[in-house]
Picture 1 (tube, rainbow, N blue to C red):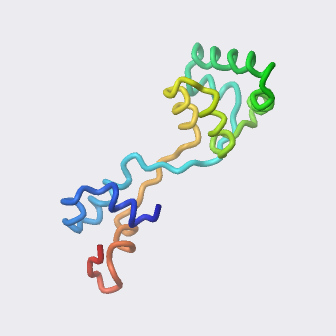
Picture 2: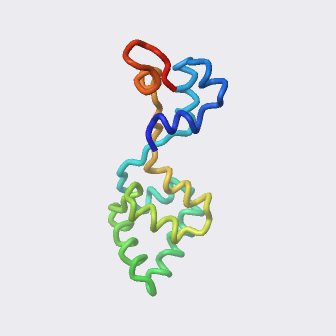
Length: 135
């Protein structure tokens, strides 16, 4: 999705019509995240889920690893602290294996950072070189 498409999708019509670039940037920035590479392991899981829920998930995955080779190798990475919570494969594994969606979201959030846009970003997309509003 382009920034212009994101602006149109996230901004209420009255905010967009106001041409207030800071208000538009604030509206678009709310909840906007970027996924980054974050390597982690057992401690990361327990930090994200809490000690009891984290341990229960790790125990469950360890048991499942005896019959599922994808889980087995994922656990090797977790045990070494090399599981990438931001990679497409890592996030896909979390979605496939963590049945509690709240826990899955918490684990994926480990690799998400705020990705706000600025009023200048809005001006670059919504105004021409003379400052005329083009959206």
